[in-house]
Length: 347
Image (cartoon, rainbow, N blue to C red; front, side, top):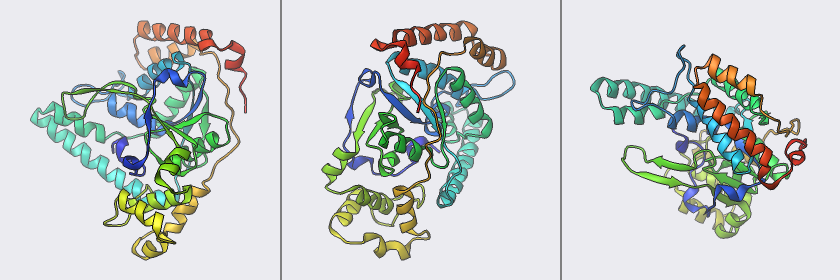
């Protein structure tokens, strides 16, 4: 399933503004790791849709994305930290099954398109067939640690943990393509952080410039004239990862009108849902989170990175060494920050 299909579909009503990556200079950003990895697996592919792989057939698209994209972020003065999902809530079971079916269907269509020689069509379906498994996750964590970037393990949803960190002031913002961070209470959400740059539109020979977007929860609530609880209710009516599809016949605009002017909206539709809407609301209001983590940025382990990427996964040694030089220069320069402030940052 494409990343754009995940999360709650309320984006059309949420005010956001484009910013330059450099505007986040000196900011600590908690990135939804699974969201980013899915993006890299979807975008970084060969012409026929095949992901990048090493000589043993192991996928490396996500490693390429994490290595080079994080170098770009650090060069812009950003201090990234990656938050990984823990155990998915029982409420998400139906959505996970739906995503699995969608991936399997996309895989079949990918193979059919390849057999017909329709490479553009094949790549489209290949992107939708992206799957994250434990091996990909562990490799991603290993690379991030070698790069000196904090890895945080959430007890449940990574977005909830990232939002909690932003809410507590431990990081400036949560970063994800989804808007769920706002429902979890993140005061700031940054979108497009890991896909900033020139991107090709799916299925078209058109390229667009993708820039980061900053979404402020307080500004969004003020614009919509509701509070966070009402925002959650609105999202539930439209549909979330915990009740895919939402309530039949209710889109974002109608949902907004209902939560603005009707009392106890969820009670009106709870009987129509196969999941308790109040449980979904409670999960967004009080998700499982933890304070057991460290935010500490370190110098990259150059030897470890070269061994991991080049010796184990067949990356170009020349390109990786060039990337490491950029990374070291960015850290040393610190974008007008001292080395001490870069390393001494523990929670």
